[in-house]
Image (cartoon, rainbow, N blue to C red; front, top):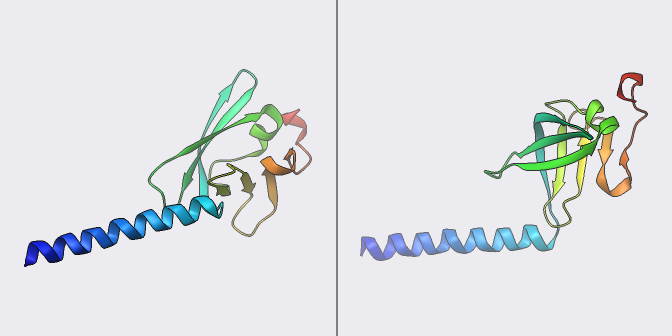
Length: 113
């Protein structure tokens, strides 16, 4: 009897995860994340985004000007299906970068040019 109950619970958990993942994908849900790492490249750099609720990371290539403006710890909203990335100074703060609106959203600092 205990095995049957355990399998029922496990089946319910799997169903919830599948339905939740399907909803997140089809609705292009925006997961909250943080910039956790930066790596410079010859033409700009790569930022590593770590979502708050997913056990994974996402890498985003950036041009030099945008890479220079983004700091480790910046708040990010990452849309799972469209892969849209919006980087903010902090949660509720000024937007710095948006892949859907042409990239850098603020004037770059002189040292970033």
